Length: 25
Image (cartoon, rainbow, N blue to C red; front, side, top):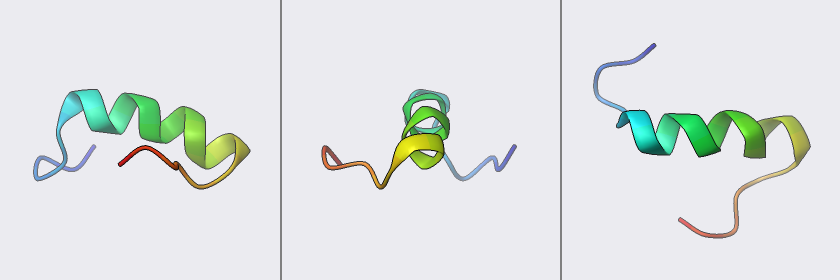
């Protein structure tokens, strides 16, 4: 996983990417 991306963001991002683009940035 990219180091520049935060673990918290990466986590919810994975779920969001699977469904749709995240609305809460």
